[in-house]
Length: 564
Image (cartoon, rainbow, N blue to C red; front, side, top):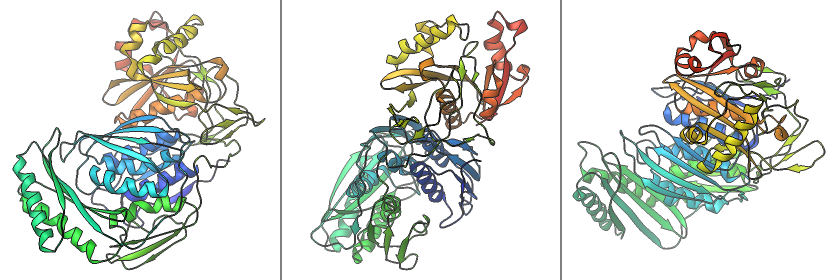
C-alpha cells in the first residue's frame, strides 16, 4: 500500500494562499505526501491563481514531487514530494503575480537542502496584497538569518501591477542549522529609514512622497532618512517603504501608488502603519510574524515573538503553539519547534510508487521517442531522485536530502535534475549518439542540439551528465516529451521517470495542459499517468516531424498523452 496522505482543508485560517504555501513547504521538508482541498475557498476568485500555481510547480521542481491538480482554478492539489534538490532554478510567475509569495514557499525548503541554490523569479515585485521585494530584502531575510537561514536577495528589475515583468535573484546558502529565536520587546535607540521610488513617472512624485513622510514623522518627534530613487521597470508605478530598526529588530511598512492616488496619500498609508506599530512594544510587524511561524516550528526548542497585530495567518501549522491576543490586536506567539535540521530527514525504506492518477506497483522499463525512439526507462519511487533507461527494477534503497544509500549502506552521489546549459551539449550529444547506434534514437548534430538546448533537462551525478530529456512545445496546449536517455551504469534507479516528471512540471508552469510521447514501451508512460491515443489526434506532431520519418507509412510506435 502507498504511504498515507495527509489531508488539509485549505479554507482554514484566513482561507487564502498562505495555507497552500505553508502546507506544501512542510510537505517538501518533511517528505510527507499531502492533499489540500478547498484551496483559497474564502477568496472572491477561489482556486489556484498564477502565483499560487507557480508556487506549486516550483516546489514540485525543487522536491521532484508528483503533483495532481496543478492547473489554474484548481481547488484541490495532491503533492507527493521526493528529496529536496539544491541547484539553480528559474520561475516566471507571469504578468504581475507576486514573486515574494513564491519565494516564501521556496526559501525555507532550499535553505534546509544540502547545498547552495540560486533562484530567479520574474513577475510582480511591488504589487498589492503581498510583501514588496524591498521588505523581503530589508526585514524578512535578516529575521530568517537570526533563525539560521541565510540568503541574499537582489532586485534586478521592478515589476508593478498590472504589467509586472520584475525580476529578483536570490542566493540561498543551504545547509541551515536552525535555532530558536525570541523577538519580544524593542529596547534601545530607534532608527528610521526608507526609500521612495518611481518607475517611468516624474521624479517629483517620489520626492513628494518622501517630503510628506518626513513632515509627518517630524511632527511626531521622529527623525528619518528616506532615499529617492528612479527604478528600472517595464511598467509604471510609485512606492514608499519605511523601516524601523531597534537593536537588530526590524519592521517594515509600505504603500503603493495607483492612478488617481495622490503621492501624499501613499506617504500617509506607510506612515500611519509605522506609527501604529511604534505605539506598542512588539518585536515584529504583522507580516513578519506570519512569515516566521514556519521556520520557528522547524527550529529546535521554544521560539517566541510579539506582534503588533494578530492575523488569521498565524494558527495554521498544527504544531504546538500558543497565541495570546485577539485577531487584529497586539499579541504574543510561542511555538514549540520540532527540531528539523538540514539533511535530517530520516532515511526511509523504499515506498510504493504514487502515480499522477493513481497508485500501483513500480513501472516496467519503457522508452520514449526523441526524434524517433528512446531507450528504456524505469519509474522511480516518490522519495528519490533516481535514474531512467535500460535498467532492471531498482533495488531497495533509502533516500535522504543530500545522498542516496543503497541496501548495503554505501553512500552514492545524489543526482541533480536541472535545466541544460551550453556546456552540457557535448555530453548530451554523446548520450544521443550512443543510443542512436542501437537504433533507439535518431542521431542529432551539435548544431541541432544547441538550437534546442532550452528544451533539455539533464541529470547530473557527481559532476557528470548521465541522463537527458527534452520538452518540445508544439502549440499553446500541446508539448512532447522527447530524447529520454540515461547511461546504462545509472539505469534501474528511476532517473528517467524523474526527468519526465521535470518536463511535466515545466509544462504546467508554462500553461501547457497536454503532454504526449511516442514510444515502443507504453507501459512505462501509463505508470506515469499517460493514456494511449490515436496518432491522428496529434496533427501538429504528424505534419511537423512524423511526415519526415522513413517509417511514416508504417509507424509502430504508440502515442500516449496526459494532462499536466
